[in-house]
Length: 443
Image 1 (cartoon, rainbow, N blue to C red):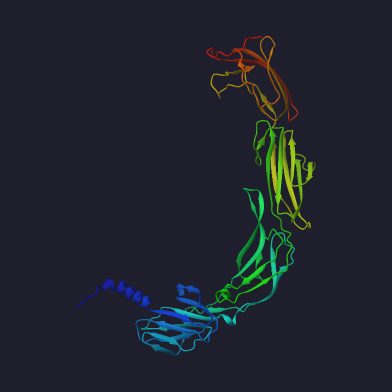
Image 2: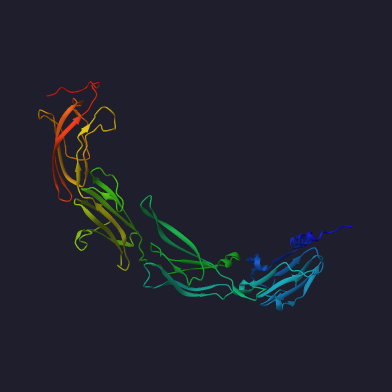
């Protein structure tokens, strides 16, 4: 005789229940198309099916048993009532199930699932009117209005008697523009999104292009191939989206600029604005010194403006973009430009031709120098080199050949962006190995 250990009983019970569930199953068939399973609530052992037309629907249950007892409930399984069924071997079929009830089978004192049936043909959506609601918030969001008839579809959780509504979904399709940061360009795009109740939906942000809105649904109707569509009148948007960047045009020793970066004057910067044209139609650039914010240095109407900062200080550049009606204004794109105080320092020794890239060029260190002139002479007053750009330097050559090592002299005249003038004179020591044979003859 087979003996079952006491500790194995819970495990055996679970195995038997699993085997029972595996071999027992419900099926819902009939009506227009295929019944649609829309809810699978495993916690409450509840599945909700939509059918289209209840008259030809068949609710069946199949297991290894030949004795099934069917019940149905309206709001709670505690108040279930028996219903007639036809048993054929191991399958039983409910005689004419009704919409708006939950059904289940009790077999050997157990049940594996509740099935709730909704006849979608009684709740199909009727779209009569759909349009964009006029709103004071059209710059940031859109509301919809119209007449869309859709009765709520409910089902009840069997154990708790809690009523739940079956949420519908629709598709909203419209044209808009999408910004590419890499290409610095807006491109046209057809956008489709799924929404709930369209008359309660807030579209944020609004489209960036003139468009109509096509509403399709609900998506339950799509399953039964009876979905509807409705399109709004053509809508002229006022929403704008603005982007901006900067490009360095010229600067001593600087080749890039970023917001808040400290720069050396003079520096010329091109400010570039982008927006969703033709909706965005008016561009205004404003630049001011932060110490005098009420005194504009420039006010320019256009998508791009170039400005040269010649004096030290902190500046703000702001782009203001308006739509063609003037209803929406975006003034969120700003840049802070910091021009440092001037500075000029001159080295006194370098070694051309000795170690390439390491102290092999005579160059000044500077900040915010707006004018510059420099000369270098030998000890007899012969000019060896002259330059007007402080970012450039002397490589220790004259006529394409290195000058002899020794002492040379410089004179530099400059003016800073802060108004300070510089006159610097001094000597330069050239240190160079005698192995370098291409020295010029001293004049």
